[in-house]
Length: 85
Image (cartoon, rainbow, N blue to C red; front, side, top):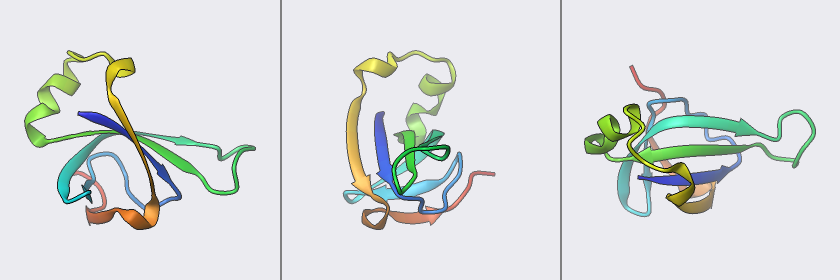
């Protein structure tokens, strides 16, 4: 599990499946930043992980501050599924 900061809006929602650096991950949560008065492009702060890590996320059996952080542009990710069911 890790935190991904996406610069720009690729049009994804919670439960989306994206490909990042050749790895398919699920967006467990998405926080949209800088809409009110911030940067010229929004940022999506996503907690992502494999499907095997979903239960760990839902039970909050992790420390968010200790997750690895990766920052990418929206153009650098491939959207496989835009939103979860």
